[in-house]
Length: 202
Image 1 (tube, rainbow, N blue to C red):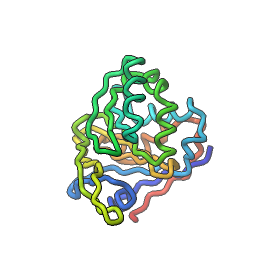
Image 2: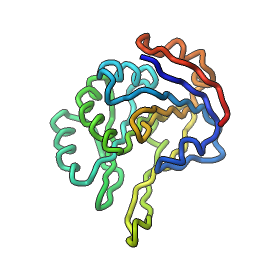
Image 3: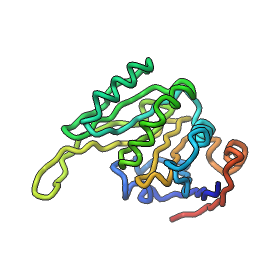
Image 4: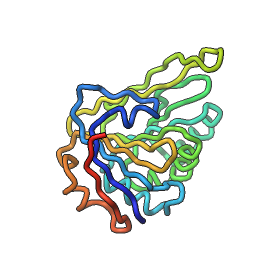
């Protein structure tokens, strides 16, 4: 599988199309994995990639339409997941789910794929203090509607991953020393990936 891996520095690149805010004063390693076509990947391959980049236990934050809230809660309860609801509006809800091992994510993989195909946000974080969820009022047409925005402030020695809106990209934001250059990635990226590496300042 051929992908592109890019190191970049301008925060506007990852915030312009996503309902997230980054602390402008932060010095981060920011890496973009593109051409992934995540919904078409073999499940085992995506799990292998995810767990090579972020070590459990970690937190998964998943955005759902409010109409799916009850069914997803029941799925989590059925599989004995530790979870909480972070923020809700009339249309959307964010769940926090603790992923302690690969099996935890495998049980939620179908829901993960469904939500990113719908354009809903999914993020992963090694520290539950990295993300804060805020409600904001947006003008939609001629009406005011509540939206949920994610504020990201990366703590020392921690990492956040999130999926691009077209489910074709994976973004990694980190203050872990191992991600300061490409050497670590060369060691940990799964062998099924063939990649072209770019170091650029957009």
